[in-house]
Length: 500
Image 1: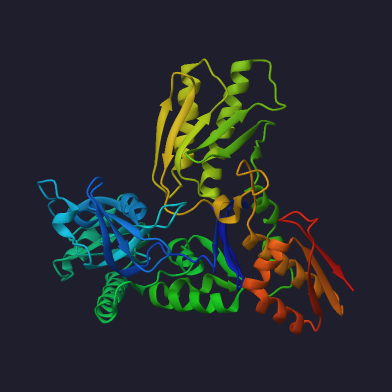
Image 2: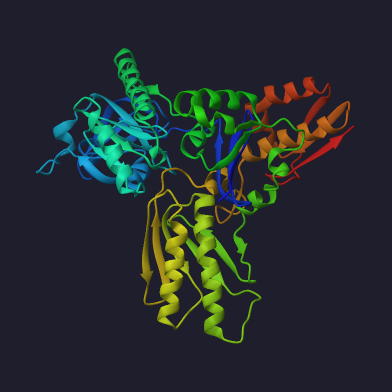
């Protein structure tokens, strides 16, 4: 399978597209203003206890206090639980779990300082979910502090290879409170390569511990890699054709990371310098725009409608303009196509929580089972944990998908102020980034003395409050004046540009 990783990086945001066999397979966005906290380690302070749910609120210095369940203190809570769940196969050693029900008040006291890691980022009104188990993923290994797990990825199925890796792990003289999971990517790697990474991760944790002793709570002691570097660590593999980046700074950071963890893969890292936007060059711009659309068309003429709500995601499958001679066979064909596309869209949009799918009605039990198998097979490439139930008595399929961060839609849009939350519009951050990109594209193409940008007053206020320096640098770079003019008649996500 041909795989390419295409990275578009600016001062405002980073975008990563994974293209498999010429089709967009994964898409990630990270904004510099909102940042990324999952995986970062903080020295926090216990603010309050919640006996009812056996948890504590921890002040880690973020906008909202994080919450720490007792199970995430005494058991295997982790920001990388998807990796651990996916990779954990044969467990070589495992600590015993407590035999009695432990209360959070037995472990923590108000005002106590504790080292925690963000397991889930803040979503809606909820603060970040925290874990007291520090987990540091590498390319081939996952390092777990204060744990004694030894495990090998279940995806390494070759018996001889598993035996070889087990002998390597057994030969390491690791501290008693250190756990290691060998990831799928470690297959065929030498003892020297794996041990080098293990020492890198162990020394990283030692530096985290050392810094935590020097700072006062609340404070950050380790920041997880940015989106581009995480992509290189987790997705860049031997079978990847290349990873191309249009930012010199991000390429430099990624080269530095690969030099430490995967020197052989540095040759797959490419620099993009052409004037044509990178997503247009690789012909995926239109595919990316479709991610935000409610309706997704299927090859046969049917379509699916994706409707996120506050409590769940509703997906409706429709036959559309397709009609065959046999109603049952028509429904079966549409549903098979829909099952594959639904799995792809959930991954692309990073939707989580409860998901309800309303397939086209089918009477044949064998057809329903075949559609369900199709959905399960398509979900296998999804790294998020999923659970799919069988067709209900009214023909619905219910499933859950792990939610670690906000969905792509919630990152790019906000509740619409015009309709009281019944719909959505692009956020000021999204529109501001679009304005800056379009302004730069226009000024770059032809030399003009002045560019006038007309926009809604609220949008003008946001743009100048957050990106005034960026706009001024654009004007100086292209020796053009840029006038920001408010226009009450314009929609909150609309703007007009005029070159003079």
